[in-house]
Length: 539
Ligand code: TEU
Image (cartoon, rainbow, N blue to C red):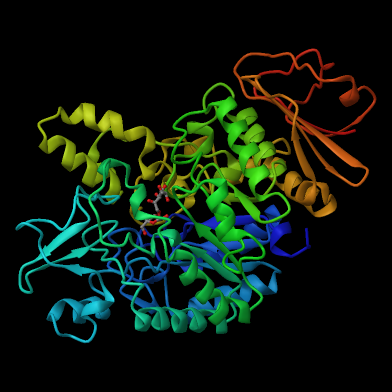
């Protein structure tokens, strides 16, 4: 496939509110990101994805935007943001911004106008509906609440929200809305940013006629509806194609077949996507299922479009806790997952703290949790009369707060994150897992990531190589090759707490071959791989 800079890039996600606090208010800030740019650079990544920093009542941690053109006070000032962009560029780092345009905050001036009266010129900028049989227009559930419909008493209509009540959905059918969003995008692109991560971008088009759903709890009717590709092609033509930038769409409920419609190179929509067949649909590790997902996406996009690889982000429990073993084999397991993500086809994303093997949390009280999705669900379930401790235990493993605890810089109070009271409690294990220790230890997870990233810079096979799985049917061993021209790499992973033997065809003999990277110090003959052992060979 045609070479482009973004296909070769590794992205580091900065969830700034939990990254580094320089003014002691307990929230990370843009000055904090600037202060840690050298750390990010040291890892070797190419691109920073910054979660939303726009003005916001901050009910959904910045995903409820009240002004697209200014910076949230907690994060800093526009001047600070501009300095961040500049300082990043000076270090050769690119910066992509979150684009949240399925919905705004209910405090956005557009919505305030829209809700002010039925004949306001912006009424049609959001999705308003008359009651049906005296009740809600249909039975759709939202991500965060039992219904997508919120009653507005003064004007006697419902408005739609796919997320919280305070996040009304924009009406993309309205041309003025689209133009307003495009000009906002140009505003940021003209400042010199390098692209967008597009929040739930496949939700923009709604199902025609808003019919009742057969399985309202599935919520997949919210996305991938007719009209979505027309919007994205228009956005591409009018805005994105005018700039040399990358775009990654957050696209829930998508299959490889549909995925290609978003990222196929001949489609002129997006560059790459996050699908959720792992993060949303695979609650715990399932090797056979993961292989099948990799296979179908590889087959679906090969030669036509580009994938992204991640196992965690600010919405999903940390990977070593959810998909690895954060107890006896934390280091090995963190390194195995890293090896996998950086050698399967697609762009690897690193969520801050992943590079030191940070783990999820289990707070003892619901009051220690901040996540609106979890809190709403807790309310909903306990109101049904369920035992609160049971509901808490059920929600803990996948709470979004698992990945939102502060970055662990050192072993001191508040993990060196803040001098104030952190907005969310620090993981108590920061005394053992932190950046300061990682940087002192040549065998740390950090240096393993650094090595993987530098290998990508030297070996095109990691980016452009063909993929072939040689371990189909094996529930623990994942053995695959990547090949480009006459270069073939063999990746061997034992995703298990037990040693496991690897059986490979003779053509893949590793005898006398070069070991490029491994996560165990003593490399044994290949009769068996140790628990969570990962090796990369050049054949
Ligand atoms: O997330 C969309 C979302 O609901 C994800 O948590 C989910 O895992 C997946 O996309 C679909 O099932 C985005 C943001 O990442 C999240 O933080 C926001 O709360 C949400 O949109 C609303 O803007």
